[in-house]
Amino acid sequence: MTFCLRAAQPSDAEYIEAIENAADALLRDALGATDWPPAEQGTTRLSAPGFTLVAVDDDHSPIGFVQVLDADGHAHLEQLSVLPRHGRRGIGRALVEAAMEEAQARGYSRITLRTYAEVPWNAPFYSGCGFSESVPEGIFLRSLLDVEGGLGLERWGRRVQMTALL
Image 1 (cartoon, rainbow, N blue to C red):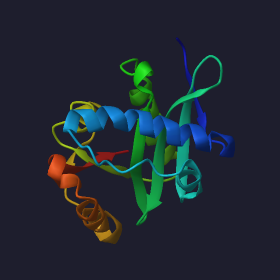
Image 2: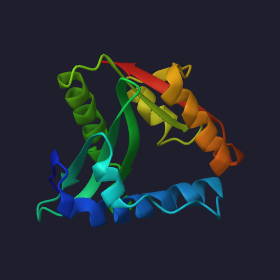
Image 3: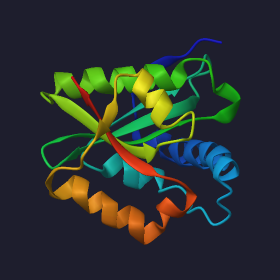
Image 4: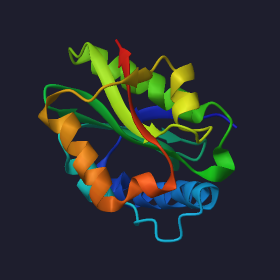
């Protein structure tokens, strides 16, 4: 199977939400998180400041996406999701690399994210993409700690911030 990457379009909103819900099912199972919140609406993701890229298959159907927020003056990788049946084929890595290239083209010098430290397709994966653990700096990044606390994300494992220089 081949895939290509492109900028997300408004017509991708429904797919984005479905892709995230499908990918989150794997995370829920791995963490034993029975009350995981549903995916954010695709239209909300697409209307946020920043950019969203999608991976599409040979039939031009979205099979993965990455959302990068323009937050507190720098790029923040907010969400990366790939349909589980297309996992482990390099799609997630290609999306991360494309997001990093786009962020650099937009003038950013670094990109951040928050993730689970011990889930293999979370922090260890991002480490392989050039990210390393870092300390939240700035209002936006520190506010994510409060958001995660409100959602109770720490009960399923240690959360970390990671940064890659572009």
